[in-house]
Image (cartoon, rainbow, N blue to C red):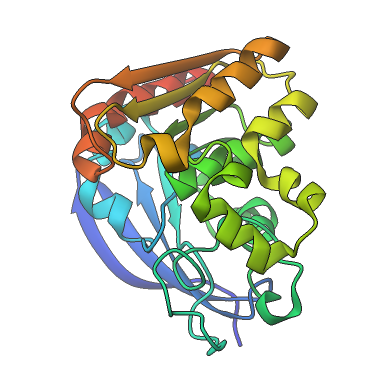
Length: 284
């Protein structure tokens, strides 16, 4: 199968274009889709820095592009938005679609080590395969200037990927991230099935643990969290991450937003701040 991306849709927005692509992923062993928002080009030779957006449980590559409104400020700031899918699809693994918080749509941005879920290698897909694919096929993108963000499970992915790859990303932000998955039901379910029973392996994908190891952070980590989010106390637990950052002097701006929940209404309200946060880090 051809791994070269094929354009499957294009829509103009804020003088740029939302484009959706399909390609075969050797990392995941299946066909994958992703979106790119291309801002308007100031010149034919101009290269845009990129902001990766990682979506949450049950989402696809479409949710963020349709619901967030991020394109308005991305257009004015000149940042390309990259929105991949959240898991492999169509592999026919037994039980892959039995629940909304595990399997299809719930890749947790890790590399599974258990044989049954061996294709769930979203960490390698996001960190290695996708940037290379973009660099080789889209000359208008400067993938050497990259930042990363996400929501919920995707916020977990953004934080862990950033902390483990401080040389690859200029900045990170998150909306309502799962910050301590080892200690929450979503994370425990995913890690048990994807990684097995060794808790030491789980720590490699837990931001609250990782910040103790990788805390040489040059740009402030930005997190927005709705105070009326029904998942706040049992699943997200940003206070745990805040405490860890404080202990190692990692710069964190955690903003608790009164009245806001876990939805894209919340994301759309504050997404402009996040785009501008990354624009500053990308030295635009």
